[in-house]
Length: 112
Image (cartoon, rainbow, N blue to C red; front, side):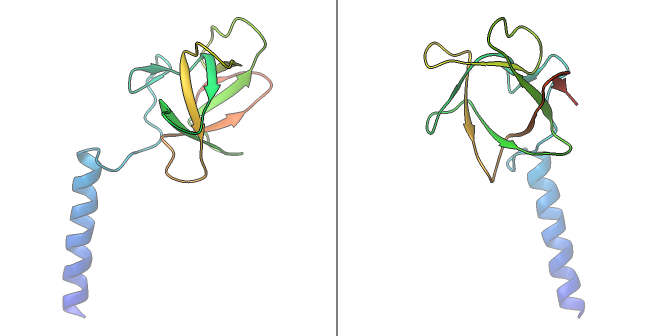
């Protein structure tokens, strides 16, 4: 029993250390200027399978970013205009290990 507690203590310390060093990616770390790791989260977006700038997971509740898909002028935080060439940001949609979680909305896009 005592041995199990020591192992759990060491495991917890290791996880906290890795999180503090940002070896394990964390969600919820979007900048107030609507960027993630220096990449702006609005503009012309290309959905890709490889060589992405960020990985995003679509969720229904508690997103890091609310995304509104627009046809033109994606100039506000969270406004995405899908393009096939010359994107501002390349996004890979994933189910696991996402950099950010997004929720598609019809109005009021932006960082939560």
